[in-house]
Amino acid sequence: MIVHSDEISRDVSVPAEAAPAIEVRDLVKAFYDVSGDRITLAAANVNFTVKRGEFVCIVGPSGCGKTTVLRILAGLEQPFSGEFRLHTSAQPAMVFQEASVLPWLTVAQNVAFPLKLKGVAAKEQRARVAELLELTGLTDFADARPHQLSGGMKQRVSVARALVDDRDILLMDEPFGALDEQTRLVLQQELLRIWERTGKTVVFITHSVDEALTLADRVLVMSPRPGTIVADLPVPFERPRDVVEMRRDKRFWDLTYEVWRLLAVSPEH
Ligand SMILES: Nc1ncnc2c1ncn2[C@@H]1O[C@H](COP(=O)(O)OP(=O)(O)OP(=O)(O)O)[C@@H](O)[C@H]1O
Image (cartoon, rainbow, N blue to C red):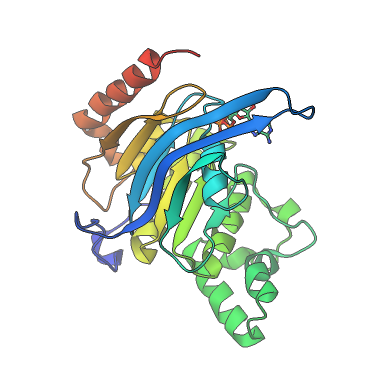
């Protein structure tokens, strides 16, 4: 889907002076094995800040601790040491690599689920779900069950559900990693359009350098395990972005090379 500039309802550039939404300081995470005598150091001295309304991608080799950092931010893991602050009153919303849809519910019921848990009135639920189905292109599939959907559509349901109760921070762990390249590109464009409209703060993990440069305001590069941030690269492309057109820009390939070089020279542990 091509985004036209008149569809954009807000200025999508993040002002340099924007307040921080997420602050991570000297974060360390270790896991103990069942006998408690062997530890795996998953992340070491992780430091970064994400501004309000910013889209930040984290890339790094497999096992370097990306998911661990995200799970700590989501409150699903405790850090070993260090600290983090989320400047928001609500828990962040999370989208995982595997679309976590409930197979016995329809698309609309899946999206409504967080509102139902909160006891939101039925009329308000219906209005909000209709809005999110529209935003994610699922209106015609409101009554479908997950087994009738493609992988990309299931992931759209996960994104809609993560946005339905309007939390400020969205944490995304390789949400498009299991999809084919073409579906992935379509969903990247749609995610950008949604982000441009909603102004969420997004932290997005990916193995794909290409995906990170397509989406992010900044790319954080992690070293191999125990992962730490080795580079924090601004991505200069103007917004709104067209995920296909931006590949004509030489800066895209220069940055791709730079990130790959950083990933290649990170010392193996
Ligand atoms: N619950 C756990 N118990 C023990 N070790 C764990 C646990 N969770 C993660 N680890 C270890 O921590 C390290 C970092 O894992 P993590 O899943 O954060 O990496 P990742 O960068 O997200 O990897 P990938 O890109 O392959 O998904 C790995 O060595 C992993 O085996």
